Length: 83
Image (cartoon, rainbow, N blue to C red; front, top):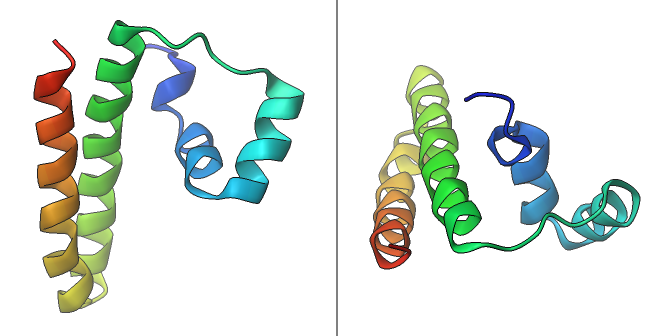
């Protein structure tokens, strides 16, 4: 994913937890919000959700796999509205 910080798992997790997000961005600095950056962030989130879905499947977590579908759909919908 070419070294884009938005592609990193750390960035995803920093966005997922308010306390971690605040501490992380206070130290790391906030990325500039652009339309292209928002689009990339949705693409990367779909990639991360896909990896989580595979891991849940590997672990036999059928409910987790099932719950991932609306999350991916929401990200794909947001992705199409960015451009």
